[in-house]
Image (cartoon, rainbow, N blue to C red):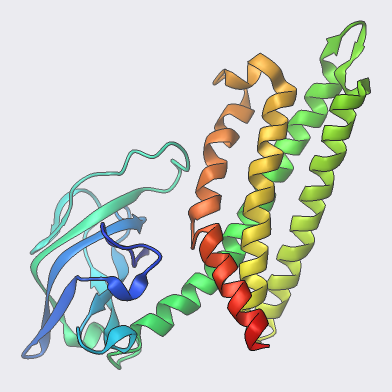
Amino acid sequence: GGFSMAEPDCGSDVSAIRTRAVPDGDHHVIDGQKMWVTNGASANLVATLLKTDPDAGHRGMTTFLIDKTPGFGEVAPGLTVPRKIDKMGYKGVDTTEMVFDSHRVPSAQVLGGTPGRGFYQMMDGVEVGRVNVAARGCGVAMRAYELARDYARRRETFGRPIAEHQAVLFRLAEMATKVEAAHQMVVMAARRKDSGERNDLEAGMAKYLAGEYCKEVVEGSFRIHGGYAYSKEFEIERLYREAPMLLNGEGTADIQKMIIGRRLLED
C-alpha cells in the first residue's frame, strides 16, 4: 500500500493541494502531480488525497484508492511514477512522485464511499503516523546511544576508556535520559490512541519531543565516535543521515508546536 497527500508546492498546508478529480459519468478524471509518495513504486494501491470541490476548502477533498502496477514509468493509463527520489537517508522505503494526466478511476473507489471526507481521513492517518514516527525516533536514538556506550567502553585515550572521562560520561547520561523521556512520551501517546480517545495533543507532543531528542542523541553519539563517525564502515554514519527525516516526517516540529499550542488553549 501507498500513501499520497503532499504535492510539489504544498506539504504542511494540506488544504492547498491542486490535483483535481473531476466527475465523468461513473468515473472521475484526475489531473495533477503528487509528491513524497510513500511506497510509490512498490505499492499496487495508493490512498491519494484529491480536490473534488475547489471552492469548499478542506471539505472539498476526497481520498481515492488508486490501483496501479508496481514499478516506474506508466503504471496505469494516464498515471506515471517517474523515478525514485534520491534521499539522504531512509532508503529502505521508496519515495516517489506520481503524475496524473487524465487518469480515469471508478467513482466507487472513493475511500468510505462518501466524497468530501478526505481531509479528515488523512488527518486521522497522520495522527497515527505521528505516534509511529515518534516510536521510530525512539528506536534510532536508542540504537545511537547503545553504539556510543559500547564504543566509549572500548575506545581508550590517555590510558583509560573514554567512558571514564567526565565529558563523555556526562554526554552518555544526557543521551540515556533523553531516550527514556521520549520513550515514555511515545508509550503514553500510543496508549491514548489505543483507548479510542482523541490524541492529537499527545501524538504531537510525542512526535515533537522524540524527533528533537533523536537528533540530539544521534549527534551526541556521532561526537563520541570521533573521526570514525564519518566513515560508512560505522553504523552511526547511517543513523546520522536517518535522523533528519524524523524531524520533518508527518509534520515538522513547527507544525507540532502549532497543534500543541492550539489544543492547550482549547482545553
